Length: 164
Image (tube, rainbow, N blue to C red; front, side, top):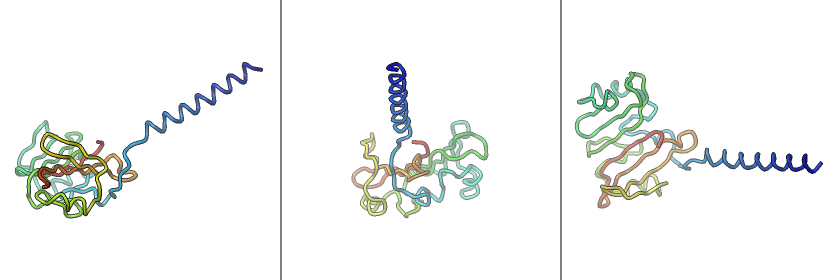
């Protein structure tokens, strides 16, 4: 009888332990950006190479085995795979070119504009070229981030990233 009780207690303990591990494994960042806010330069992380070409045309340069489209010297779009239907992994605006987030934030603006539009960031990190302020998507968009690279109080670049 004691053996059965011990086995039951051990099974309950394992079930509880497994449940805690499972919860921890899926606990990701909690963000607040909505799907419409997770666009940069009119492009969403779920858009394809074909969509990008329909908006911006052929890129000025293609690098890294067709995985990175470079438009001028200020817009980079990175893809998961070289196929035409491949989704976007990363979009970067690296200079003041007039392109913006869905909420109108652009490179060259003051950091205060970013905070007025998005509030306090979900993550802040000191980078080599300034401070990186990152905002996470909410719910099904939790693996998408919108990051602002700021130096001397000015937004120097903006990136939309999927699967951070």
